[in-house]
Length: 107
Length: 163
Image (tube, rainbow over the protein chains, first blue to last red):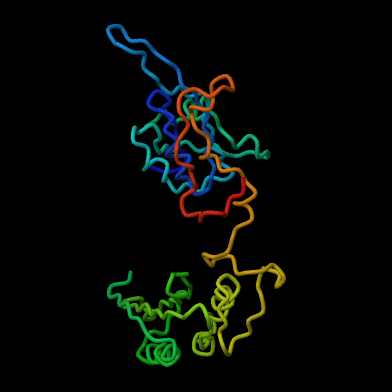
């Protein structure tokens, strides 16, 4: 496995912010809000975090993998996708869609 | 590949003498010289090896922050001269006997950046992404209780971040 990309599994992410806070390069930006969900049979509505945006700025990322390690829900994982070439810094910031879809399907 | 590897700590006074001794013993291949900033002082490390790389030795010495001076070993290993200048530039170490002219940084740039007490201006200016809390974010209104504790970036001392 080549550690060339960090992919996101958004369904597993609980917006706990651990990756954002542990990242030494400060390259992860996460935006979320809380919603109340009423489950049938439950006495009170439950508060859950809903992920609004998740960006990794690959112009800053140094591929240390600390975010992958600290994630308690395995929502981040190494991937061997490598196509991060751009002449614009803005294009190196990848959001949820790209962090999910640009995963290498081969592995 | 390296087969036998030894690590040894020496006093700053014995530094040059010990390196010369190791050189005469057969450790004639200079691998690298670098430094680590610790609470007790700046630790300088040099790694030497036999020419066939069958044996290697790592020598380290700790120098008090108050007087960052160490004898140069550039006359024993000419290649160490460049490494010593890098350590001088990044840690503020003065290697006596070597030309300590700066390699990359302008002398007016202030404190050596690899020292832990140096404030990195980029860290102070940039907004820490970890400061955001999920609760604060619903339609611009506060929902639920915001965190009682102020979050701080790991490894960044208090009072570093203004806000």
